[in-house]
Image 1 (cartoon, rainbow over the protein chains, first blue to last red):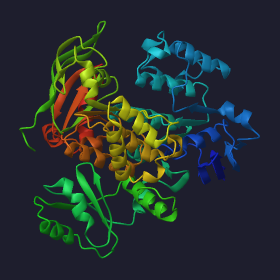
Image 2: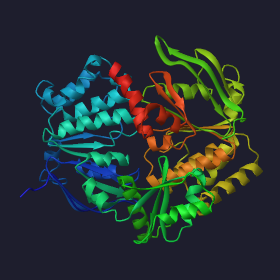
Image 3: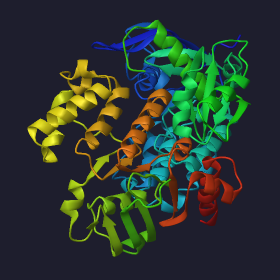
Image 4: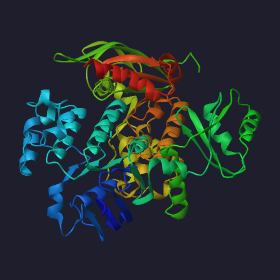
Length: 315
Length: 249
Protein backbone atom coordinates (compact mmCIF):
# COMPACT_ATOMS: atom_id res chain seq x y z
CA UNK A 1 0.00 0.00 0.00
CA UNK A 2 1.22 3.41 -0.96
CA UNK A 3 0.34 5.57 2.00
CA UNK A 4 0.53 8.80 -0.01
CA UNK A 5 2.98 11.62 0.40
CA UNK A 6 0.38 14.24 1.20
CA UNK A 7 -3.16 13.52 2.41
CA UNK A 8 -5.86 16.09 3.12
CA UNK A 9 -9.09 14.98 4.77
CA UNK A 10 -12.08 17.29 5.15
CA UNK A 11 -9.88 20.36 5.53
CA UNK A 12 -11.81 23.54 6.18
CA UNK A 13 -10.41 26.98 6.99
CA UNK A 14 -12.10 30.34 7.44
CA UNK A 15 -10.75 33.84 7.99
CA UNK A 16 -13.44 35.69 9.93
CA UNK A 17 -16.38 35.65 7.51
CA UNK A 18 -14.47 34.39 4.46
CA UNK A 19 -14.37 30.65 3.82
CA UNK A 20 -10.92 30.09 2.36
CA UNK A 21 -11.16 26.29 2.12
CA UNK A 22 -14.23 24.07 2.20
CA UNK A 23 -13.95 20.32 2.86
CA UNK A 24 -10.81 19.68 0.88
CA UNK A 25 -10.08 16.00 0.25
CA UNK A 26 -7.12 14.91 -1.84
CA UNK A 27 -4.36 12.31 -1.66
CA UNK A 28 -1.06 12.92 -3.45
CA UNK A 29 1.27 10.01 -4.23
CA UNK A 30 4.94 9.88 -3.51
CA UNK A 31 6.95 11.19 -6.46
CA UNK A 32 3.99 12.92 -8.04
CA UNK A 33 4.12 16.35 -9.68
CA UNK A 34 0.75 17.67 -8.55
CA UNK A 35 -0.73 21.02 -9.58
CA UNK A 36 -3.32 23.17 -7.82
CA UNK A 37 -4.76 25.26 -10.63
CA UNK A 38 -6.86 28.30 -9.82
CA UNK A 39 -7.06 32.10 -9.78
CA UNK A 40 -6.18 34.44 -6.91
CA UNK A 41 -8.51 33.84 -4.00
CA UNK A 42 -9.03 30.14 -4.80
CA UNK A 43 -7.38 29.11 -1.51
CA UNK A 44 -4.09 27.79 -2.89
CA UNK A 45 -1.84 29.69 -0.51
CA UNK A 46 -3.95 28.79 2.55
CA UNK A 47 -3.70 25.14 1.57
CA UNK A 48 0.09 25.33 1.24
CA UNK A 49 0.41 27.15 4.55
CA UNK A 50 -1.55 24.40 6.27
CA UNK A 51 0.61 21.68 4.71
CA UNK A 52 3.84 23.46 5.63
CA UNK A 53 2.55 23.76 9.27
CA UNK A 54 2.40 27.56 9.21
CA UNK A 55 -1.35 27.60 9.73
CA UNK A 56 -3.79 25.22 11.44
CA UNK A 57 -7.02 24.18 9.72
CA UNK A 58 -10.35 24.77 11.53
CA UNK A 59 -11.37 21.16 10.98
CA UNK A 60 -10.01 18.09 9.23
CA UNK A 61 -6.62 16.43 9.22
CA UNK A 62 -3.64 16.70 6.93
CA UNK A 63 -0.51 14.57 6.79
CA UNK A 64 2.78 15.05 4.99
CA UNK A 65 4.92 11.92 4.56
CA UNK A 66 2.77 10.30 7.25
CA UNK A 67 3.24 13.11 9.79
CA UNK A 68 0.28 15.06 11.13
CA UNK A 69 0.51 18.80 10.39
CA UNK A 70 -0.57 19.76 13.92
CA UNK A 71 1.02 17.18 16.22
CA UNK A 72 4.13 16.38 14.18
CA UNK A 73 4.87 19.82 12.80
CA UNK A 74 8.54 19.69 13.80
CA UNK A 75 9.09 16.50 11.81
CA UNK A 76 7.37 17.99 8.78
CA UNK A 77 9.46 21.15 8.82
CA UNK A 78 12.62 19.05 8.49
CA UNK A 79 11.51 17.24 5.37
CA UNK A 80 9.71 19.82 3.31
CA UNK A 81 10.95 22.60 1.08
CA UNK A 82 8.74 25.66 0.64
CA UNK A 83 8.95 28.43 -1.90
CA UNK A 84 6.33 31.05 -0.96
CA UNK A 85 4.61 33.17 -3.56
CA UNK A 86 6.36 36.31 -2.44
CA UNK A 87 10.17 36.39 -2.59
CA UNK A 88 11.21 35.66 0.99
CA UNK A 89 14.96 35.36 1.00
CA UNK A 90 17.34 37.77 2.68
CA UNK A 91 17.68 40.75 0.34
CA UNK A 92 20.88 42.01 1.94
CA UNK A 93 22.67 38.68 1.87
CA UNK A 94 24.44 37.58 -1.30
CA UNK A 95 23.27 34.69 -3.44
CA UNK A 96 25.81 32.36 -1.88
CA UNK A 97 25.16 33.57 1.68
CA UNK A 98 21.44 32.89 1.29
CA UNK A 99 22.10 29.38 0.07
CA UNK A 100 24.66 28.71 2.83
CA UNK A 101 22.24 30.02 5.43
CA UNK A 102 19.43 27.70 4.35
CA UNK A 103 21.80 24.73 4.13
CA UNK A 104 23.17 25.38 7.61
CA UNK A 105 19.82 25.72 9.39
CA UNK A 106 19.07 22.23 8.09
CA UNK A 107 22.54 21.12 9.26
CA UNK A 108 23.65 20.52 5.70
CA UNK A 109 26.13 22.12 3.31
CA UNK A 110 25.94 23.36 -0.27
CA UNK A 111 28.40 20.65 -1.29
CA UNK A 112 26.33 17.80 0.18
CA UNK A 113 23.32 18.34 -2.05
CA UNK A 114 24.88 20.31 -4.87
CA UNK A 115 23.82 17.63 -7.37
CA UNK A 116 20.16 18.46 -6.65
CA UNK A 117 20.45 22.14 -7.40
CA UNK A 118 23.31 22.21 -9.91
CA UNK A 119 21.03 22.53 -12.97
CA UNK A 120 19.28 25.51 -11.45
CA UNK A 121 22.07 27.10 -9.44
CA UNK A 122 24.48 27.00 -12.39
CA UNK A 123 22.54 29.87 -14.00
CA UNK A 124 23.03 32.17 -11.00
CA UNK A 125 26.41 30.94 -9.75
CA UNK A 126 28.28 33.59 -11.80
CA UNK A 127 26.47 36.17 -9.62
CA UNK A 128 27.00 34.43 -6.30
CA UNK A 129 28.57 37.52 -4.70
CA UNK A 130 25.67 39.75 -5.71
CA UNK A 131 23.09 40.71 -3.09
CA UNK A 132 19.72 39.01 -3.54
CA UNK A 133 18.01 42.41 -3.75
CA UNK A 134 19.93 43.16 -6.93
CA UNK A 135 18.86 40.05 -8.83
CA UNK A 136 16.37 40.08 -11.72
CA UNK A 137 13.00 38.38 -11.21
CA UNK A 138 14.08 35.21 -13.01
CA UNK A 139 17.28 34.92 -10.99
CA UNK A 140 15.46 35.46 -7.70
CA UNK A 141 13.13 32.64 -8.64
CA UNK A 142 16.06 30.31 -9.33
CA UNK A 143 17.73 31.25 -6.05
CA UNK A 144 14.51 30.70 -4.09
CA UNK A 145 14.11 27.26 -5.65
CA UNK A 146 17.74 26.39 -4.87
CA UNK A 147 17.24 27.42 -1.24
CA UNK A 148 14.06 25.34 -0.98
CA UNK A 149 15.96 22.30 -2.29
CA UNK A 150 19.32 22.53 -0.55
CA UNK A 151 18.35 20.24 2.36
CA UNK A 152 17.02 17.57 -0.02
CA UNK A 153 13.36 17.71 0.97
CA UNK A 154 11.00 14.77 0.49
CA UNK A 155 8.15 17.06 -0.44
CA UNK A 156 8.53 20.39 -2.22
CA UNK A 157 5.83 23.10 -2.06
CA UNK A 158 5.98 25.78 -4.73
CA UNK A 159 3.36 28.49 -4.33
CA UNK A 160 2.81 30.27 -7.66
CA UNK A 161 6.43 30.06 -8.76
CA UNK A 162 5.61 31.33 -12.25
CA UNK A 163 3.22 34.21 -11.53
CA UNK A 164 4.26 37.32 -13.44
CA UNK A 165 6.91 35.34 -15.29
CA UNK A 166 7.10 35.50 -19.10
CA UNK A 167 6.14 32.56 -21.33
CA UNK A 168 9.70 31.48 -22.08
CA UNK A 169 10.94 31.58 -18.48
CA UNK A 170 7.83 29.68 -17.44
CA UNK A 171 8.69 26.91 -19.90
CA UNK A 172 12.22 26.74 -18.58
CA UNK A 173 10.96 26.57 -15.01
CA UNK A 174 8.73 23.61 -15.79
CA UNK A 175 11.62 21.81 -17.45
CA UNK A 176 13.51 22.19 -14.14
CA UNK A 177 10.55 20.74 -12.24
CA UNK A 178 10.40 17.70 -14.50
CA UNK A 179 14.06 16.99 -13.77
CA UNK A 180 13.46 17.30 -10.03
CA UNK A 181 10.58 14.89 -10.17
CA UNK A 182 12.83 12.32 -11.80
CA UNK A 183 14.94 12.55 -8.60
CA UNK A 184 11.96 11.21 -6.66
CA UNK A 185 10.89 14.42 -4.94
CA UNK A 186 7.14 14.85 -4.52
CA UNK A 187 6.25 18.28 -5.87
CA UNK A 188 3.11 20.30 -5.13
CA UNK A 189 2.85 23.42 -7.24
CA UNK A 190 0.14 26.05 -7.50
CA UNK A 191 -0.49 28.26 -10.50
CA UNK A 192 -3.11 30.58 -11.98
CA UNK A 193 -1.91 29.70 -15.53
CA UNK A 194 -4.28 27.08 -16.89
CA UNK A 195 -1.88 25.97 -19.62
CA UNK A 196 0.60 24.74 -17.00
CA UNK A 197 -1.87 22.06 -15.88
CA UNK A 198 -0.87 19.94 -18.88
CA UNK A 199 2.65 19.67 -17.45
CA UNK A 200 1.53 18.02 -14.16
CA UNK A 201 0.91 14.33 -13.46
CA UNK A 202 -2.37 15.21 -11.82
CA UNK A 203 -4.13 18.46 -11.08
CA UNK A 204 -6.86 19.85 -8.86
CA UNK A 205 -8.96 22.65 -10.35
CA UNK A 206 -9.62 25.09 -7.56
CA UNK A 207 -12.05 28.00 -7.19
CA UNK A 208 -13.43 29.83 -4.13
CA UNK A 209 -12.00 27.29 -1.69
CA UNK A 210 -13.42 24.25 -3.47
CA UNK A 211 -11.72 21.54 -5.48
CA UNK A 212 -13.91 21.32 -8.58
CA UNK A 213 -12.06 18.37 -10.18
CA UNK A 214 -9.06 16.16 -9.36
CA UNK A 215 -7.52 13.98 -12.05
CA UNK A 216 -4.84 13.68 -14.72
CA UNK A 217 -5.00 16.50 -17.27
CA UNK A 218 -5.98 13.98 -19.97
CA UNK A 219 -8.82 12.54 -17.91
CA UNK A 220 -10.15 16.02 -17.10
CA UNK A 221 -10.23 16.84 -20.80
CA UNK A 222 -11.85 13.47 -21.64
CA UNK A 223 -14.55 14.11 -19.03
CA UNK A 224 -15.43 17.44 -20.66
CA UNK A 225 -18.51 15.89 -22.26
CA UNK A 226 -19.42 18.65 -24.70
CA UNK A 227 -18.17 19.31 -28.21
CA UNK A 228 -16.35 22.58 -28.74
CA UNK A 229 -16.50 24.38 -32.07
CA UNK A 230 -13.85 26.97 -32.87
CA UNK A 231 -15.50 29.72 -34.90
CA UNK A 232 -14.06 32.60 -36.90
CA UNK A 233 -15.60 35.21 -39.15
CA UNK A 234 -14.92 38.65 -40.60
CA UNK A 235 -16.70 40.28 -37.63
CA UNK A 236 -15.05 38.85 -34.53
CA UNK A 237 -16.59 41.44 -32.18
CA UNK A 238 -20.17 40.62 -33.17
CA UNK A 239 -19.50 36.91 -33.30
CA UNK A 240 -19.92 36.54 -29.52
CA UNK A 241 -23.39 38.08 -29.36
CA UNK A 242 -24.59 36.56 -32.63
CA UNK A 243 -23.63 33.02 -31.57
CA UNK A 244 -25.31 33.51 -28.21
CA UNK A 245 -28.71 33.60 -29.89
CA UNK A 246 -28.48 30.06 -31.30
CA UNK A 247 -30.95 27.77 -29.51
CA UNK A 248 -29.66 25.82 -26.49
CA UNK A 249 -26.30 27.56 -26.42
CA UNK A 250 -24.26 26.47 -23.39
CA UNK A 251 -21.42 28.97 -23.70
CA UNK A 252 -19.64 31.32 -26.10
CA UNK A 253 -16.28 32.90 -25.32
CA UNK A 254 -13.11 34.21 -26.94
CA UNK A 255 -10.23 31.80 -27.06
CA UNK A 256 -7.10 33.31 -28.60
CA UNK A 257 -7.87 34.16 -32.22
CA UNK A 258 -11.12 32.12 -32.33
CA UNK A 259 -14.41 31.97 -30.45
CA UNK A 260 -15.34 28.75 -28.66
CA UNK A 261 -18.95 27.70 -29.08
CA UNK A 262 -20.67 25.02 -26.97
CA UNK A 263 -24.22 23.73 -27.36
CA UNK A 264 -26.25 21.87 -24.72
CA UNK A 265 -27.93 19.48 -27.17
CA UNK A 266 -26.13 16.20 -27.90
CA UNK A 267 -27.72 16.09 -31.35
CA UNK A 268 -26.55 19.60 -32.27
CA UNK A 269 -25.69 19.97 -35.95
CA UNK A 270 -22.69 22.31 -36.42
CA UNK A 271 -24.05 23.34 -39.81
CA UNK A 272 -26.47 25.46 -37.79
CA UNK A 273 -23.60 27.74 -36.75
CA UNK A 274 -22.75 28.75 -40.31
CA UNK A 275 -26.41 29.08 -41.30
CA UNK A 276 -27.03 31.32 -38.32
CA UNK A 277 -23.98 33.49 -39.03
CA UNK A 278 -24.75 33.86 -42.73
CA UNK A 279 -28.17 35.21 -41.74
CA UNK A 280 -26.43 37.70 -39.46
CA UNK A 281 -24.34 38.89 -42.45
CA UNK A 282 -21.01 37.37 -41.41
CA UNK A 283 -18.58 36.29 -44.12
CA UNK A 284 -15.30 34.32 -44.11
CA UNK A 285 -16.95 31.93 -41.66
CA UNK A 286 -14.84 29.04 -40.38
CA UNK A 287 -16.29 26.40 -38.03
CA UNK A 288 -14.01 23.62 -36.79
CA UNK A 289 -14.43 21.05 -34.07
CA UNK A 290 -11.62 21.46 -31.54
CA UNK A 291 -10.15 19.65 -28.52
CA UNK A 292 -10.99 21.13 -25.11
CA UNK A 293 -8.17 22.52 -22.98
CA UNK A 294 -7.90 22.70 -19.20
CA UNK A 295 -9.05 26.32 -19.45
CA UNK A 296 -12.27 25.25 -21.22
CA UNK A 297 -12.77 22.64 -18.54
CA UNK A 298 -12.12 25.14 -15.76
CA UNK A 299 -14.74 27.54 -17.12
CA UNK A 300 -17.31 24.76 -17.52
CA UNK A 301 -16.68 23.70 -13.92
CA UNK A 302 -17.01 27.31 -12.78
CA UNK A 303 -20.41 27.61 -14.45
CA UNK A 304 -21.54 24.33 -12.88
CA UNK A 305 -20.52 25.36 -9.38
CA UNK A 306 -22.01 28.85 -9.91
CA UNK A 307 -25.41 27.33 -10.54
CA UNK A 308 -25.09 25.47 -7.22
CA UNK A 309 -24.17 28.35 -5.00
CA UNK A 310 -26.39 31.40 -5.08
CA UNK A 311 -23.85 33.86 -3.72
CA UNK A 312 -24.92 36.18 -6.52
CA UNK A 313 -21.91 37.20 -8.50
CA UNK A 314 -21.76 38.80 -11.88
CA UNK A 315 -20.46 35.89 -13.92
CA UNK B 1 -9.74 49.46 -39.49
CA UNK B 2 -9.75 53.15 -40.29
CA UNK B 3 -6.39 54.52 -41.25
CA UNK B 4 -7.12 58.19 -40.66
CA UNK B 5 -7.08 57.94 -36.88
CA UNK B 6 -4.63 60.25 -35.16
CA UNK B 7 -1.48 59.08 -33.45
CA UNK B 8 -1.78 59.51 -29.69
CA UNK B 9 1.64 58.04 -28.93
CA UNK B 10 4.63 58.87 -31.10
CA UNK B 11 8.01 57.43 -30.19
CA UNK B 12 11.14 58.08 -32.24
CA UNK B 13 14.47 56.59 -31.22
CA UNK B 14 13.71 56.37 -27.53
CA UNK B 15 16.89 55.52 -25.62
CA UNK B 16 17.12 55.04 -21.87
CA UNK B 17 20.42 54.21 -20.20
CA UNK B 18 21.15 53.40 -16.59
CA UNK B 19 24.92 53.86 -16.39
CA UNK B 20 26.29 51.47 -19.01
CA UNK B 21 23.09 49.46 -19.16
CA UNK B 22 20.81 50.23 -22.10
CA UNK B 23 17.24 49.49 -20.96
CA UNK B 24 15.58 50.93 -24.08
CA UNK B 25 17.57 50.84 -27.30
CA UNK B 26 16.17 53.13 -30.02
CA UNK B 27 12.47 52.27 -29.72
CA UNK B 28 10.36 53.66 -32.55
CA UNK B 29 6.62 53.18 -32.83
CA UNK B 30 3.25 54.91 -32.98
CA UNK B 31 -0.09 54.09 -31.43
CA UNK B 32 -3.36 55.39 -32.88
CA UNK B 33 -6.41 56.74 -31.15
CA UNK B 34 -8.72 53.97 -29.95
CA UNK B 35 -6.18 51.26 -30.73
CA UNK B 36 -5.58 48.28 -28.45
CA UNK B 37 -1.81 48.02 -28.48
CA UNK B 38 -0.12 44.97 -26.89
CA UNK B 39 3.31 45.74 -25.46
CA UNK B 40 4.93 42.36 -24.90
CA UNK B 41 8.35 41.16 -23.88
CA UNK B 42 10.23 38.85 -21.56
CA UNK B 43 10.91 39.84 -17.94
CA UNK B 44 13.70 42.38 -17.93
CA UNK B 45 13.30 43.27 -21.62
CA UNK B 46 12.69 46.93 -20.74
CA UNK B 47 8.89 47.22 -20.87
CA UNK B 48 8.44 48.81 -17.45
CA UNK B 49 11.10 51.43 -18.15
CA UNK B 50 9.41 52.37 -21.44
CA UNK B 51 5.99 52.59 -19.78
CA UNK B 52 7.36 54.83 -17.01
CA UNK B 53 8.76 57.17 -19.65
CA UNK B 54 5.50 57.23 -21.61
CA UNK B 55 3.60 58.04 -18.40
CA UNK B 56 5.92 60.95 -17.65
CA UNK B 57 7.40 59.32 -14.55
CA UNK B 58 10.93 59.08 -15.86
CA UNK B 59 12.96 61.05 -18.42
CA UNK B 60 14.43 59.31 -21.42
CA UNK B 61 18.15 59.64 -22.18
CA UNK B 62 17.32 60.68 -25.75
CA UNK B 63 14.66 60.43 -28.41
CA UNK B 64 11.55 62.30 -29.51
CA UNK B 65 8.51 61.12 -27.59
CA UNK B 66 5.01 62.56 -27.58
CA UNK B 67 2.15 61.18 -25.53
CA UNK B 68 -1.38 62.55 -26.06
CA UNK B 69 0.29 65.35 -28.02
CA UNK B 70 2.60 66.36 -25.16
CA UNK B 71 6.34 66.18 -24.87
CA UNK B 72 7.76 63.75 -22.27
CA UNK B 73 10.62 66.10 -21.34
CA UNK B 74 8.72 69.26 -20.44
CA UNK B 75 5.01 68.50 -20.31
CA UNK B 76 4.82 65.55 -17.94
CA UNK B 77 2.03 67.10 -15.87
CA UNK B 78 -0.14 67.51 -18.95
CA UNK B 79 0.60 63.91 -19.89
CA UNK B 80 -0.42 62.67 -16.45
CA UNK B 81 -3.72 64.50 -16.70
CA UNK B 82 -4.51 62.83 -20.00
CA UNK B 83 -3.69 59.22 -19.19
CA UNK B 84 -5.00 56.51 -16.90
CA UNK B 85 -2.87 53.80 -15.32
CA UNK B 86 -3.58 50.44 -13.74
CA UNK B 87 -0.89 48.06 -12.58
CA UNK B 88 -0.72 44.35 -11.95
CA UNK B 89 -0.77 45.09 -8.27
CA UNK B 90 -4.14 46.19 -7.08
CA UNK B 91 -4.07 49.97 -6.94
CA UNK B 92 -7.22 51.04 -5.11
CA UNK B 93 -7.61 51.83 -1.41
CA UNK B 94 -8.66 48.72 0.47
CA UNK B 95 -10.14 50.54 3.45
CA UNK B 96 -12.23 53.00 1.46
CA UNK B 97 -15.63 52.04 0.09
CA UNK B 98 -16.21 51.50 -3.60
CA UNK B 99 -17.82 54.95 -3.96
CA UNK B 100 -15.09 56.64 -1.95
CA UNK B 101 -12.45 55.20 -4.27
CA UNK B 102 -14.25 56.72 -7.25
CA UNK B 103 -14.61 60.01 -5.39
CA UNK B 104 -10.95 60.10 -4.42
CA UNK B 105 -9.59 59.38 -7.89
CA UNK B 106 -12.18 61.62 -9.53
CA UNK B 107 -10.98 64.42 -7.26
CA UNK B 108 -7.35 63.80 -8.14
CA UNK B 109 -8.17 64.04 -11.83
CA UNK B 110 -10.04 67.30 -11.26
CA UNK B 111 -13.54 66.13 -12.11
CA UNK B 112 -16.42 68.18 -10.71
CA UNK B 113 -18.69 66.70 -8.02
CA UNK B 114 -21.41 66.30 -10.60
CA UNK B 115 -19.10 64.53 -13.05
CA UNK B 116 -17.86 62.19 -10.33
CA UNK B 117 -21.42 61.33 -9.35
CA UNK B 118 -22.47 60.64 -12.93
CA UNK B 119 -19.40 58.63 -13.89
CA UNK B 120 -19.53 56.59 -10.66
CA UNK B 121 -23.18 55.72 -11.24
CA UNK B 122 -22.40 54.79 -14.83
CA UNK B 123 -19.61 52.35 -13.89
CA UNK B 124 -21.44 50.84 -10.92
CA UNK B 125 -24.38 50.10 -13.17
CA UNK B 126 -22.21 48.73 -15.94
CA UNK B 127 -20.39 46.39 -13.55
CA UNK B 128 -23.71 45.50 -11.91
CA UNK B 129 -22.31 46.30 -8.49
CA UNK B 130 -24.51 49.22 -7.41
CA UNK B 131 -25.55 47.16 -4.36
CA UNK B 132 -21.99 47.11 -2.98
CA UNK B 133 -21.21 50.83 -3.53
CA UNK B 134 -21.07 51.37 0.24
CA UNK B 135 -18.87 48.37 1.02
CA UNK B 136 -15.20 48.76 1.78
CA UNK B 137 -12.98 47.21 -0.83
CA UNK B 138 -11.60 44.51 1.45
CA UNK B 139 -15.03 42.92 1.50
CA UNK B 140 -15.71 42.58 -2.19
CA UNK B 141 -14.68 39.60 -4.36
CA UNK B 142 -11.32 39.71 -6.10
CA UNK B 143 -12.79 39.30 -9.58
CA UNK B 144 -14.70 42.56 -9.19
CA UNK B 145 -11.74 44.54 -7.89
CA UNK B 146 -9.77 44.23 -11.09
CA UNK B 147 -12.71 45.47 -13.13
CA UNK B 148 -13.25 48.24 -10.62
CA UNK B 149 -9.60 49.30 -10.83
CA UNK B 150 -9.95 49.54 -14.59
CA UNK B 151 -13.11 51.65 -14.28
CA UNK B 152 -11.31 54.01 -11.90
CA UNK B 153 -8.37 54.24 -14.33
CA UNK B 154 -10.70 55.49 -17.09
CA UNK B 155 -13.02 57.52 -14.82
CA UNK B 156 -11.74 60.81 -16.27
CA UNK B 157 -12.03 59.49 -19.85
CA UNK B 158 -8.29 59.71 -20.53
CA UNK B 159 -6.88 59.70 -24.06
CA UNK B 160 -4.76 56.67 -23.20
CA UNK B 161 -4.95 54.03 -20.51
CA UNK B 162 -1.84 52.05 -19.58
CA UNK B 163 -2.55 48.55 -18.25
CA UNK B 164 0.43 46.75 -16.76
CA UNK B 165 -0.44 43.04 -16.54
CA UNK B 166 -4.03 43.81 -15.58
CA UNK B 167 -5.21 40.20 -15.63
CA UNK B 168 -2.43 38.44 -13.67
CA UNK B 169 -3.95 35.76 -11.43
CA UNK B 170 -7.50 36.47 -12.60
CA UNK B 171 -9.88 33.56 -13.31
CA UNK B 172 -10.56 32.72 -16.97
CA UNK B 173 -14.14 33.99 -16.96
CA UNK B 174 -13.29 37.33 -15.33
CA UNK B 175 -10.28 37.65 -17.63
CA UNK B 176 -12.61 37.56 -20.63
CA UNK B 177 -15.03 40.04 -19.04
CA UNK B 178 -12.06 42.31 -18.44
CA UNK B 179 -11.21 42.18 -22.12
CA UNK B 180 -14.79 43.06 -23.03
CA UNK B 181 -14.33 46.19 -20.94
CA UNK B 182 -11.11 46.92 -22.82
CA UNK B 183 -12.95 46.65 -26.14
CA UNK B 184 -15.68 48.98 -24.92
CA UNK B 185 -13.14 51.56 -23.79
CA UNK B 186 -11.36 51.37 -27.15
CA UNK B 187 -14.69 51.73 -28.96
CA UNK B 188 -15.23 54.80 -26.85
CA UNK B 189 -12.04 56.29 -28.28
CA UNK B 190 -9.68 55.48 -25.41
CA UNK B 191 -6.35 54.09 -26.55
CA UNK B 192 -5.39 50.96 -24.61
CA UNK B 193 -1.70 50.23 -24.06
CA UNK B 194 -1.49 46.82 -22.41
CA UNK B 195 1.14 44.35 -21.23
CA UNK B 196 0.39 40.70 -20.49
CA UNK B 197 2.01 37.31 -20.03
CA UNK B 198 -1.09 35.55 -21.33
CA UNK B 199 -0.38 34.89 -24.97
CA UNK B 200 -4.04 34.33 -25.87
CA UNK B 201 -4.59 37.96 -24.83
CA UNK B 202 -1.96 39.03 -27.36
CA UNK B 203 -4.40 37.74 -29.99
CA UNK B 204 -7.03 40.21 -28.73
CA UNK B 205 -4.84 43.23 -29.50
CA UNK B 206 -5.00 45.14 -32.78
CA UNK B 207 -1.23 45.35 -32.98
CA UNK B 208 1.48 43.85 -30.83
CA UNK B 209 5.09 44.78 -30.27
CA UNK B 210 7.55 42.32 -28.78
CA UNK B 211 10.56 43.63 -26.90
CA UNK B 212 13.71 41.58 -26.56
CA UNK B 213 16.74 42.84 -24.72
CA UNK B 214 15.79 46.53 -24.86
CA UNK B 215 14.78 46.55 -28.52
CA UNK B 216 11.48 46.11 -30.35
CA UNK B 217 12.12 42.98 -32.38
CA UNK B 218 8.67 42.68 -33.94
CA UNK B 219 5.65 44.91 -34.41
CA UNK B 220 2.56 44.00 -36.40
CA UNK B 221 -0.98 42.67 -36.15
CA UNK B 222 -1.19 39.24 -34.48
CA UNK B 223 -2.15 37.74 -37.86
CA UNK B 224 0.80 39.44 -39.53
CA UNK B 225 3.25 38.20 -36.90
CA UNK B 226 2.00 34.62 -37.09
CA UNK B 227 2.30 34.70 -40.85
CA UNK B 228 5.80 36.17 -40.73
CA UNK B 229 7.05 33.45 -38.40
CA UNK B 230 5.00 30.71 -40.05
CA UNK B 231 3.35 29.62 -36.78
CA UNK B 232 -0.21 29.20 -35.50
CA UNK B 233 -0.21 31.11 -32.22
CA UNK B 234 1.22 34.22 -30.60
CA UNK B 235 2.76 31.93 -27.99
CA UNK B 236 4.96 30.41 -30.68
CA UNK B 237 5.87 33.85 -32.06
CA UNK B 238 6.88 34.97 -28.57
CA UNK B 239 8.90 31.86 -27.86
CA UNK B 240 10.73 32.12 -31.20
CA UNK B 241 11.82 35.67 -30.44
CA UNK B 242 12.58 35.37 -26.75
CA UNK B 243 14.26 31.96 -27.04
CA UNK B 244 16.58 33.23 -29.76
CA UNK B 245 17.74 35.85 -27.29
CA UNK B 246 18.29 33.52 -24.33
CA UNK B 247 20.28 31.17 -26.59
CA UNK B 248 22.62 34.05 -27.43
CA UNK B 249 23.53 34.67 -23.80
